[in-house]
Image 1 (cartoon, rainbow, N blue to C red):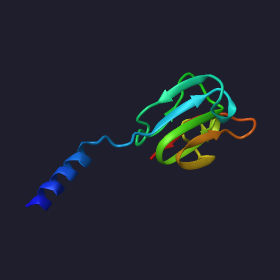
Image 2 (cartoon, rainbow, N blue to C red):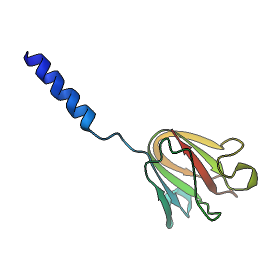
Image 3 (cartoon, helix red, strand yellow):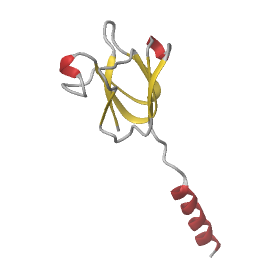
Image 4 (cartoon, rainbow, N blue to C red):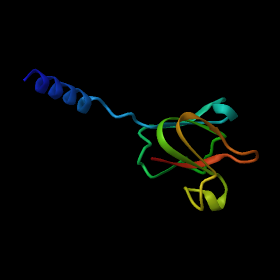
Length: 108
């Protein structure tokens, strides 16, 4: 009986704890420096995420991701089109290739 109660309590605690939510922070400078342009909370499973009004960022700090794909700014790749230029997972910072900015991401 004691084992059943302990198992029930452990299961209740696990189900009550919030899942880790993926977040992306968009920065004006390389290596996640410079001004913070925007923050995308609860990004996981949100589909394609991009900055409005033609915005872009030189780097993006990401946390809590299983997989995050980065798309450069510029016509063919805008709004998560025609293949990503970089895929990462977990947490970190991704700087766009020389001469480009990040325009959109997908997070799973």
